[in-house]
Length: 257
Image (cartoon, rainbow, N blue to C red; front, top):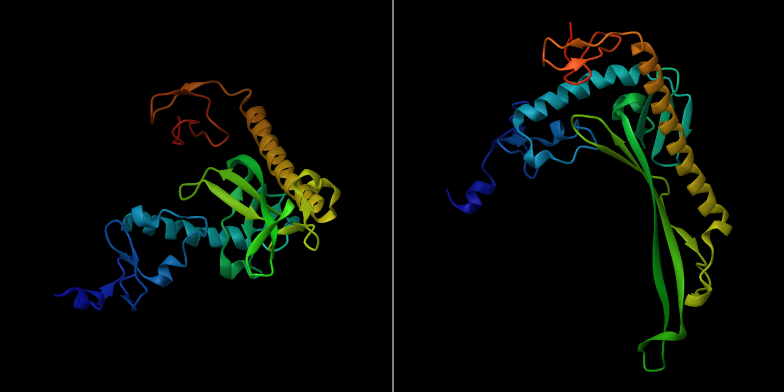
């Protein structure tokens, strides 16, 4: 079969067994994935090409169970505008989504205890203002003039088998400083004096503070619960461990006794 024939060869999804439509194939390490199955994967998952059919099936099982967590989710706080960090403080969980219909989007529900760290990234882009001379050539002002734009992202590092970072972009469009009047390089504006910049920075700090404090509280509760538990040798992995409140090994997660 020639190259042209292979392009139009019928392909079957290795996960659901359905026929894959033209241009709808998503390659896996050892098979094919249809667009419909791919749409059910976590939006934070980015390692599809190196995943096996078995890996994808396991993730889809996890995603199906996640629907129950979404149904039980009770939002008590929301941070962000387009993409939001939504918190269920009573059940010590959160999710990240831009969807209005949670049941349909099925955003990953993460336990506070699985937050490993939160990093804030404020990126600055500098653009030079230029003008055209009488001959139509682009010229720089003397001294050069610039204006500045800023974007705000929060990177939440988590413990999850299918992704390790959830990135939240807080602003839908860049925050512009001096958009109507460029400034000389030696008179760069202080972004802290601009309300919109301060609002997004405060929002990012609120997310970091809440998730970091929540993780520490859960950790403290777990340590308090384990304070009077005697260490044992795990029957699963052989390590000396202090079992958690469910009797599970802190190293392998199996039943320690």
